[in-house]
Image (cartoon, rainbow, N blue to C red; front, top):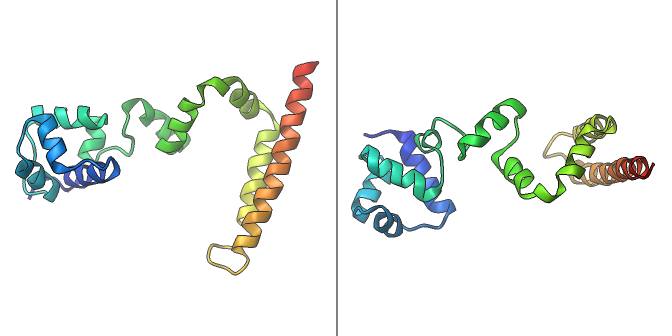
Length: 160
């Protein structure tokens, strides 16, 4: 039996990208049977094929091996240091036109008050209780109101 980490990651990547075994096989120059064997964990690819798979899916070798949660090596440290998900990091990268706004928001002292308030409101009732949905809606309403106050304060400061 080959490495389970690799076969699980390969299965996930095929599924997430809606790539067929045949498409991957054609792209990297192997038979679809080879991809099937890798996916089932019966065998593993040689190092050159492994490299081609990582390049095809645009993921790091560590991710493909199952040794990292981050698909991109450049995100690994941020995930580790800040506990952000890969999706959150990608969203911040996509929001590059808003970096001044995001930085100002994060640097604002009220940000920690806002985060603490949201955390407190969301922890009022444990998941699965009757009041969970009501409390979540209320927490979001309060969070939006708090955010509105922070943004208005930031706008006021920037106009001075």
